[in-house]
Length: 228
Image (cartoon, rainbow, N blue to C red; front, side, top):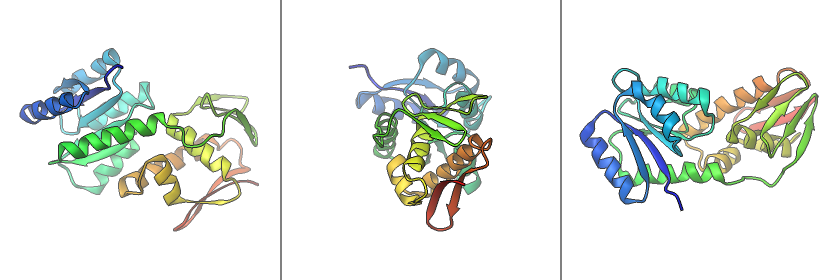
């Protein structure tokens, strides 16, 4: 069985050595880089299973790197590492496609658990619905994660597809926000909650060509997917 490949970007070389050796001792293959300007090329060449990005880096910061990675891969999990504590930095990270956020200093056990959790979420199928379904003027090919309306075809990320599938399965019913978070992210933490907000906004923009389709926010409770 091949090892899980981690792209680890950290400019604090002493910390980086400790983290790399700890991950390798747990069976991970680690590709490490300290210069932000070299990360994208390394990502393309190594095709990692998960990315762990420090935010404050020389030449190019972790947010910019994540944005560039998302241009070519919408699904690879990204964990941000940072000494910053401002909420706006957390929100910015998730808006750029980050999956998790760990503040320094952190324990290796916490990092490993979060890596394993994100990898497990990527490979597990949350629900059993498959095939093709019609949503107004749209067709959703679930197994292929493709949404199209006759004019354009959009390839969804794994989590976008799972969220749309969950909303469709529970159409015309209120689905609790906490249930979505626990099923798709594993917990209802603040960070995951902000991530869900981003994904709901994305799905609304994808479905905007059919005004009869609506994802309604039920304040304090969750969402309801309806066709007028």
